[in-house]
Amino acid sequence: MYRRYIKRILDIVISLCGIIVLSPVYLILAVLVRIKLGTPVIFKQERPGKGEKIFYLYKFRSMDNRCNEKGELLPDEARLTPFGKKLRSTSLDELPELFNILRGDMSLIGPRPLLVRYLPRYNERQRHRHDVRPGLTGLAQINGRNAITWERKFEYDVEYVEHLTFGMDVRIFFGTVRAVLKHEGINSETSATMEEFMG
Picture 1 (cartoon, rainbow, N blue to C red):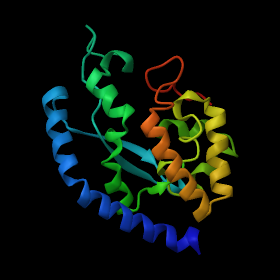
Picture 2 (picture 1 turned 30 degrees about the horizontal axis):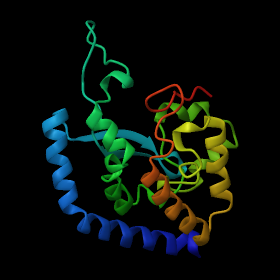
Picture 3 (picture 1 turned 180 degrees about the horizontal axis):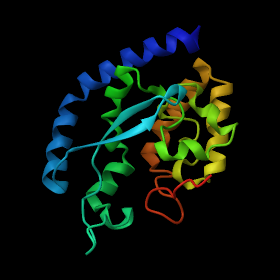
Picture 4 (picture 1 turned 90 degrees about the vertical axis):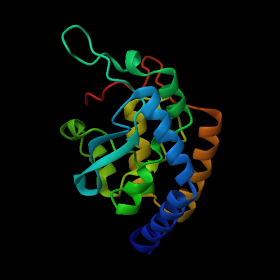
């Protein structure tokens, strides 16, 4: 009952209330991103959702568009500005995903939606992370986020899918609040964000 109906109802109510209450924050962040990083203010990228159905994920932009002499984008570490790092460390860049949740692309809690190009690289067990809607936060995010290995992250994702309950979602929600306040696991040990998953 919770997995099929109640979870979606909660997603709609919470995301809609969040969008309304945080509307002044959206406006302020949009202006700051426009001033400090330029346009577009919103970063849009295709991600796989439930059943590997592709949707557009929305975030506030946190990197600039600096390129090398060949016109190729510089690595993330070079393009992630101090302002962008602050957005990421506070998870404020994730706020536009509330619209994804309201639309039904995502859930408040679930495995994080990753890149489309990773789809052929998952093993059979890892693919089960797509049996539920991806989330704004999840079990992996309260257990190390980008500071843990891909393999460990996927184990947490599948564990969530297999044991999804209201109690687990509540625990993840409050664990996320704690992780955000402590700025835990924002970066991996060797990268400004997270190394690419190669399978």
